[in-house]
Image 1 (cartoon, helix red, strand yellow):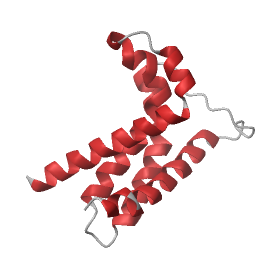
Image 2 (image 1 turned 90 degrees about the vertical axis):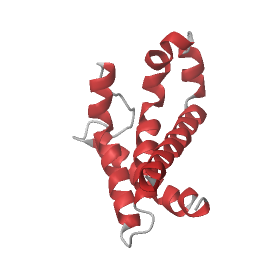
Image 3 (image 1 turned 120 degrees about the vertical axis):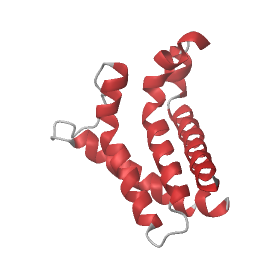
Length: 135
């Protein structure tokens, strides 16, 4: 029971941190898209989905793999996998493609590679930051 509660706590804290990071990064888009609480996910979800998804996965894995010797590696790999899978999940949830504007975006899988690197980096900061502070 304690492992399940820890996993839920980790996933929830990662989701809150990811949502806060998404709000801080795209406040202008989110505040302009918000029309009411009934449609909050369809209005604001596309702007917050990337950090919310990556934060949830990282929080869950970091919390469950906290005491293992390979916890950091697992957290970083799962963060990178969450970032890599984000465009596919985005198109499944919102029925539109994810567009990230980079200068080199014409390279195949450039979005996925950048998001995987972002997820791995976020996992590094989460594992050695919040995961170590809140025992």
